Image 1 (cartoon, helix red, strand yellow):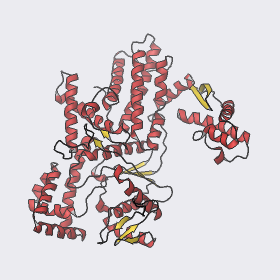
Image 2 (image 1 turned 90 degrees about the vertical axis):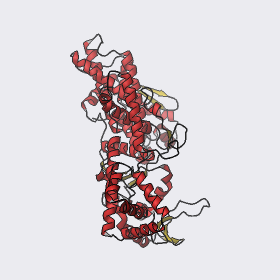
Image 3 (image 1 turned 60 degrees about the vertical axis):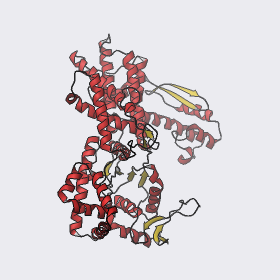
Image 4 (image 1 turned 90 degrees about the horizontal axis):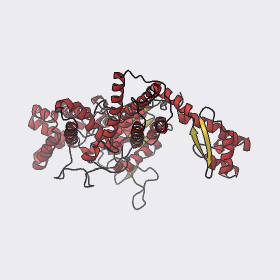
Length: 572
């Protein structure tokens, strides 16, 4: 069944086309434009008439039957539409019977989402949270839109630091090294390796020789490297599981995966005439990128010493994802500071034909996570905060809050709910902000059950579940939806906007739009609940109707929270 917006759009477009063709039968469709994009203003300009006159003609040609109760012409040419109540009830009935809540399938292509991307043998810190949480939400939303979604975790698992790390593993012994990595002491392992490197020239020589052996494919060196990677990935997987994101070890596609293709990237670009020598390095110069002096900005593909820059790996990624995975859309959930680098890579890939027409690469940039002091989120000593420490503290605070609300419970009894609340609060605190902006990470605010927070939405869902439990006890069954009260109609109209909220969120990859919608829905439901008694309504048909309306709200909240990667608890 079509959404409310689709049905209205079709009717209005028919009226719009009728006016355009009536004014000029040979007017091309491209000149008529789409009423949704340009409306009466654009057509008025084309026909040389006032927008209000055009709007009046559209109004006279518009067929409101079965959808619109009232149409009002306002201002310079705006049409204000009031939906027919019977139409609203029919749309809600259709929504209640549809697992997708009338959200259409709009994406039939393959989408690759590049997100999280920690470094092997380095702890995941708070700075990894944004990429991981935003990326996971976009994975879920893209899949819901119908796309075939491929998750790729582009680990930093290659390069000169591995000579140092492998030699340190040899020194401490494999069993001790594996134990340190498996329990999450990645930072300790890395710091120890760095200390050995800085303290001993002999160790430095061994590390450099080990890098050469790694690059040449020495069997024993590769075995030790694989041990480091596997242990790190296993630990990352435990963090992802705690955070409730979809990434697994099978989604790892590290820098090393493209190592054998880097020379082919250089050769291919060179053959297409896209490389120039600059400062001894092989560089591409995509048009439109300049430095502060206005000079063309180089994208270094191969360094003067023969090594490959990050651009070579990123270009190999693009080529592989389009050629092998047949991706139509590539989403890079990476910090805003990488925008110029990625845009240059996208431009060069397009010039090389690796990102053909019909394929799209998008940088999903985001700002920094700040502490309550409005500075980058760090410990008091100035160190970066481990991601597991963030999760632990949120869990402790959520547990304490839930025990205060439910004094008869034990920590064991509230543990699972505390996990859902703490993780959901962390995610919502991030996703509800416009992603490109910095945001303040505040435990007290994000765990509050009032305001635009994760717990507020969870409580709204739990409240509805409580209504249904009581309804079952009272043998009240949800029936046909009937709308009479103003609060019922307000709630119904917000519910019908869910497909638009999903479309808008995916249009510019902005999960905050879905958060804003869900918060509005929860607020509107609260107003409805306060003004429209459900189970104590005097009329049985009214009770059944309002219970059915609550059911649509419950499904919408649960679906929306799930698309953000959050649980929807039935009890709080």
